[in-house]
Amino acid sequence: MPDYIPNVRLRAWRNENRLTRADMADRINATPIGVAEGLACDEERVRRWEAGEVRWPRTPYRLALTQLTGLEPEALGFTQNRQTGSRLIEAHMMPMDALRAEADLYGTMQLAQQLQASDVGSGTLEALAEAVDLLCRAYPVVSASTLRDRTQKRLAQINHLLAGRLTLDQHRELLVITGWLTALLGCVHYDLGEREEAETARRTAFEMGRQVGHGELMGWAHEMSAWFALVEGRYEDVVTAARMGQAVAGPSSAMVQLTLQEARGLARVGDRREADRALTRGAEVLGSLPMPDHPDHHFVFDHAKWVFYAATCYTWLVDDDRAEEHARETIQMHTRPDGTSNAPMRVADAHIDLGIVHARRGDLDAAVNHGMAAFDIDRRSLTDLVNRAGDLNRVLRQHHRREALAEEFHERFLTARRALIAHQHELLD
Image (cartoon, rainbow, N blue to C red; front, side):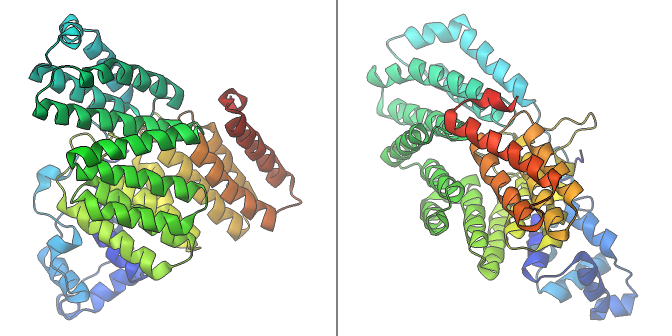
């Protein structure tokens, strides 16, 4: 798993202008500075720029890039600050450790005494905020049912504090803490196919954000609405919810996520031009934000996630070469040397994207192998997985209906759908 921060702004410019890496390299060489300096840019050099392996190209290449794009290097995602060029994708603490740390935090006698006190001190609120952050960081790899149960337990322990003796500032801070925890609960409910519970939690999180004027929390509640609509096939609602969220989210991870959800909704209806524009806007906002300390946090948008979202957008837009490029890099970025993943749900979706691409190209073996790989990943959002597997299943039945391998995947898909409907996730084990 590489230690580099993907340069999504450069990649977004190239995608919006519908250039391959080889095309872009040729155009760089053909610029006035490229000709004068005899530049020999090639596909591999562009890949290294986009992967973040090179954060600040040599002067003639920077000048050629500006001549080609009309943008300064910083606007294309390059930076001279090499200190930001490592450890983005891998968190400082593994998510499973985050779950244990949260349990230890709640298990301390000091916190237990604080929770029983009639007055809430600043130490209590700081400990609660830290505990919620740890739960949000556990989301990528901890099973949805485990995280749901833990989150419900913490909400039950926290909610009675709201009825206690609080200052106005304490009440506001506690509402924000509870809002984040409720938003997380809504996400894991939806992962488990518990639609009504997920929507109730989403609405509650939004209301808490509204009461205290917390734009980012409200933005994430709108993002959840866009996500639900995307999975449920209400693509116009995806775009509407995403744009409503952008109106309140401010410059934040929520704004990036909402812009990328808008791109996905537009991709679903085949609007390539506007989807590309949304991807570019998302990259620009992301480039303006500080590097996250904990990119594993569910409500933090990192650069690798942009690549993951772009893979699915281009899959839906039937741009197979671009979809494959982004999907393969998603898997590479999130796979450790021992074969495990720090973002298994992203990897599962990337396998589905690759399966669809191979199915369209007529490579049935590769298509089914990637599809089965998605089912074999332990941490899964079953709701999302069934939806995406349905995409692959339709392509397989369209192009390879009579093939035994396609039928094998179809049966695996039906089993997953039955497990989701019946809330019997053990059917997939």
